[in-house]
View 1 (cartoon, helix red, strand yellow):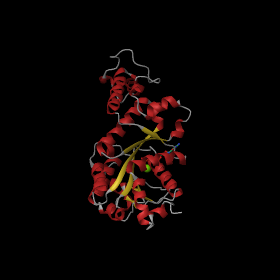
View 2 (cartoon, rainbow, N blue to C red):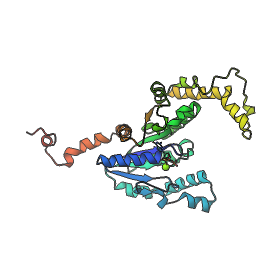
View 3 (cartoon, helix red, strand yellow):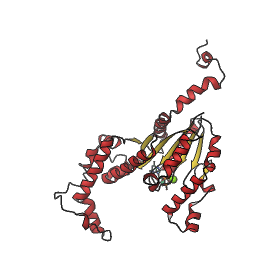
View 4 (spheres, rainbow, N blue to C red):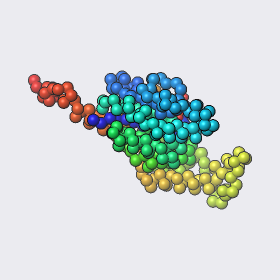
Length: 304
Ligand SMILES: Nc1nc2c(ncn2[C@@H]2O[C@H](COP(=O)(O)OP(=O)(O)OP(=O)(O)O)[C@@H](O)[C@H]2O)c(=O)[nH]1
Ligand SMILES: [Mg+2]
């Protein structure tokens, strides 16, 4: 028997938990069961009570206090502890049947998705171990990033890094679309959804610097806001963004879906992509006639 799940990831405040809540609401309206797993050891308020909450195993607050760690080091410690106590996840998930969508709500610390190998190990355990969950990653990036193109390309690079690291079906999502409504022309938005590297050359908010040598790296002085700002507008920064955009273009891997979590149609559209990526409906269709113990002609309504 297969199980089905989605790992909701992305930077801090990208709208992950809001998207999880919107998905749960939509699944309930569609009479589909779901199983909500909170893996953020710092999360406090939930619109829906999680079926599994990592805080019942370990809380970030306790770790920070007892181990004298900061929030990022504390989070890594919590995940290492989870990896040593995987039964905490495995035992309840064993009971989940294939008609459920298992929703994993992840924390926003970006290091978890880039260079620490914990998440690939966790994903392997969920997908390839006895649980055998068909999983898809949903990586959220806030849509307001499209207003600031270097920020957009940096965010896209982080999504790509997660895609390459996790080696699982992946859906990238521009969240909070309501916030940029009317601010970006439809034609321009299309070029962000199917990432077009030429956007880095045509940034209206940052004119192309005339002198290639106008800002050298040694001028970077984090203590002086004026100088930092200068670097962010200079030719070195421009060239860096172009190189990042080219890298993203070369991979031809990254495209985004639009999401407005307040709009159920939008949530439904994103969920359809997730269902396709994990082949959820195929498994349900195969199951139905057998499980209903019905004559196939009767089940298809062709017996009269
Ligand atoms: N306007 C708008 N605001 C949103 C949307 N989704 C989330 N937000 C807001 O963005 C903020 C962060 O949302 P969360 O869902 O907590 O984000 P998160 O990614 O889970 O945050 P962390 O778990 O702290 O990393 C909250 O104030 C939400 O109300 C959206 O679609 N539109
Ligand atoms: Mg959250």
